Length: 447
Image (cartoon, rainbow, N blue to C red; front, top):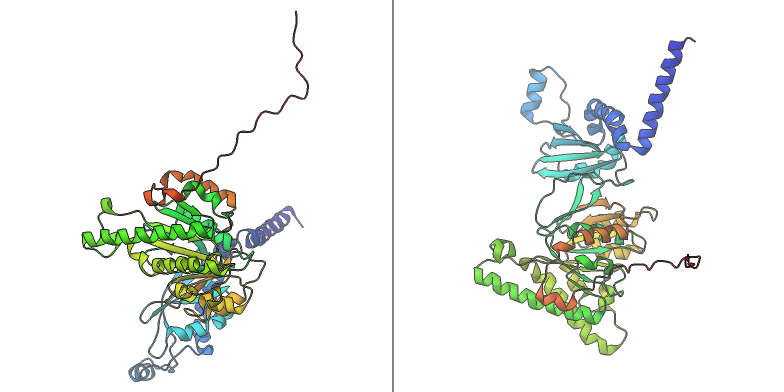
C-alpha cells in the first residue's frame, strides 16, 4: 500500500477511536455528531409504521377517507398523530404531536417502552403540553450517569432553586412559591444528604433566612452555621424554635391583615418580611421519645409543625422535611403532617412500604420506579407532586466542604431576625496553628 492509503487508514482509525472515546467520556458530543442524525433519520423513515405496530393510529373521518379514495386515488390507511415540530437538544429530541380524535396522552405513555426500542433511544417520556398536543421527550443516552448541571438555567424567580437533573435532560428545581412544603425520603447511602447539600448551596445564594433543625447534635447542619439564622440540635431546642416560628407566623398574619392582602408576595417590598426555609434533617428524631413523660412535649412540637405546614405558605415560611421513613408508626400527627407536604422526593428505599409512604398517595405509578433504583447509583431519586406527575432525577456530586464553602461565601446574606437571635448558631473559626518548635536549639552568637 502506498503512503496515501496509510494516511487514509490512519485518519479513519483516529476518527473511529475519537468517536468511541466521545461515546464513553463525552456522550453529549457523540450524540450531537452521530446519535442525533441517526435517530432523527430512523424516526422520519419509520414513524408511520412504528405507530401502526404500536396501535397508535385511528381510522380517518368519513370525509377524509372519501377524499383520499376518490380524489387522491390512494389507499385509506389509519392515521397516526401528526408531527408538528421536531426540535433537537443536546441530550435528545423533542417531538410535538397533535393527537387525532380517539387517542389520549395515556395511550402514548403506555407505549413509551415500545417506542424507545423501536427508535433506539435511552428513554421516551410523554408530556402533555396543552389539550390535544403532546411532546415526546427522547433521551439519546443515560443523562443521569454523570450529572452535569447546565451553566445557564432558564429557571427564574425569587424562590427558585435548581437542584438536580431530570432523566430527560431538563433541570429539576424547587420553586417554593408553587410547591411550598416538601418531603425527602431515602435509606442510608442513598444520596439523601447529597440532595440536601445541593439544596442548601442553592438556598444560600438567595436573600432568604435559613432555619436548621438537626437533632443529631448538628452533625449535618452545623457546618452551614455561617448562613443559618437559627439552628436547633436537640428536641428541646427544636420545640422552642418551632414555638418561636409559630409566634412569628401569627405576627405576619397580622401584617397581612393590616395591608389587606392574603399573601406575603402581595405586600410592598419595603414592608415584606424575609422568607424563611425550615430544613428538618431527620424528622423521626422529633417524633420518637424514650419516656412517657416526654410525650406531651412531642405532641406540642408535632402540632406546631402541622400548623406551619397548613398555614405558613401565605406568610413566606416553607418546610423541607427529610427522613428515612415517615409513616404512622412514628406516632400521633405523622400522617397529618405528611398530607400537607406537596413535593415528594424519594431516593432508594429499603422496602416498598417506604416508597408508598412518599409517593403512594400522589403518584402510585412511581412506587415501582423507586424500588428499582440500584444501590450503586447514589443520588438517583424519583420526584413527584400532587398533580400525579413524576420523574427520575439525580443530584450532582457535592462534598460537605464545598457546600460549607458556599454558605461561608454568602454569609453576608444571612438576615438578622430578632425572634431567632436566641437560636443563632455559633460560627466556629479554625484556630491558627502555633509554629512548630525548631528541631535544633538556637545557639547564641558571641563575638
